[in-house]
Amino acid sequence: MKNSSESKFFTYRVINTLIMFIALVIVFSLFTPRNIFISVRNLASLGKLVPDLGVVALGIGILMVCGEFDLSISSTLPLCSYIFASALFGGLSPVWGFVLALLSGLALGFINGLIVVKTRMPSFIITLGTMMFWKGILYVWSRMMPTSIRTFIPTDSLFQKVLTGSIGPFFPVQTIWFVAFAIVLGIILHFHRFGNWIYATGDNQEAARAMGINTNLVKIICFMIVGVLCAFAGCMQSVRLGSFAATQGVGSELRAMAACVIGGTSLRGGIGSMMGVFLGILTLHILDNGLVLMRVPVFGVNAFIGLATIFFVLLNSYLDRKIK
Amino acid sequence: MNENQNRQPLVRMVNIHKWFGRVYALRGVDFEVGQGETVGLIGDNGAGKSTLIKILSGYHRADRGEIYFEEHKVNITSPRDSRRLGIETVYQEQALAGDLSIARNIFMGREPVKNLGILDRKKMDEESMKALEELGLHLKSPNLPVKTLSGGERQGVAISRALLFEAKLIIMDEPTVALSVKEVREVLEFIRKLQKERIAVIFITHNLYHVFDVADRFVVMARGKKMADVKKEEISLDELSELVVKSALVE
Image (cartoon, rainbow over all chains, first blue to last red; front, side, top):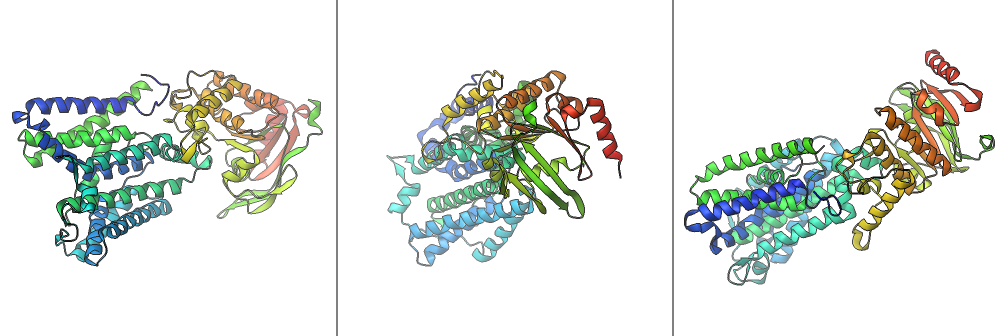
């Protein structure tokens, strides 16, 4: 493998995910009934659904590179979505409600990050705590009632079009947002100074600190990136559904992590790439979608995602040992 | 080396005290390094040598005492302060991030950037290769992950980081620990190159044989105190080794 320029961009980890991705696309294209997988309708619906989790998982990828996790995304996402809905009911315009939700996401991320770096406890436990805490708050506050926001954001309003509309007859705008976030975050991670700090923090925190990097700040900022992406995804989803639902984001914390692992992100930090995470998200979703189209029972699909996750962890650790 | 006698002091640490909770780790230590001088800092585990050096590199703060750099009193409160003065620390194994490339490691925390903080990779690659060659290390590519290098090469990467930023003093914390004989020789060779560049070195070790060859002066510590401070021409290896054993035993 070439080890000259841009070495981090296409490592063997990314290649593995890419091969899996292409293989699945071919298999599902050939073997789904009436080749429904590659029908425009199916691809367009994937283009709408994938970004819901995808946008958040991109942030989780970055957070995992810096050596931390965030389980609380499954609460941050619906909480921000509810803040958005409440703001609309409170008389704020969609844009200001959206801004308020994004700020809330940043704040929730900041709280997670601050607790993690101040207590030096594993983020797994801290964010498990904040997940349950915010979920409790949300359930009491919203009484778990779905809240329609369609009257505030009518279909074909500019706000709706920008967030969840489509270009041409079917190309969903969400896909553009998803790709745009992936590109921006990819540039930060791979080409920006801050990206080098993220890798250094995740790879060897002591070394990074000795070299004058404020590793606590790096971690807090990564948590805030995840928070704001949750808010974005939460609002995008509620606009698409036309309603807030307390069940938004359920299970997203583990699926996001699975997507990152399938994309070659290490659980120990310091290893991972935006391209890998991006492909990991796509792979997880088409696995999901393709199997359902092949009439595998919806709840059985998880079994395959689980297998894929374990497969990639084993594959990558095997290759690591071999290459070393 | 006759110039040893009248070197200007580069760093002077005066009457340094440090407590960790109830542990009295440094009990009034005076420590000095001349311009371009190599000082071997010797002592058992827990003698206080790492603590002393971490105060100099900004990792810990002294509870009492003063530090003078080029005869100016300085206040070192963070690793950044220390590096700004021209003091670079090469820590034991932990100095590098294994999965990151050589260039990314060398520039860690001080990345050259173009607009908007985008890394200037060309500059990173070229300058890291140049610095490595200055040390006599010819590596294939600046983009190799550091974990693929040998122990000696890794020390070379860590030292070239210091060279590149024009350090006046390089602190090496146990640079030869866990290295093979050949790799130790490499590291000692790096130190000789630094001496030629008139860069001062503090070489912390408990291996006398590694340090005796390269150092100009030896400082022996035990239980938070300086026990001896001798020039190389005043002592033989055997005497030094006896001195170290004795100072460890003194109550």
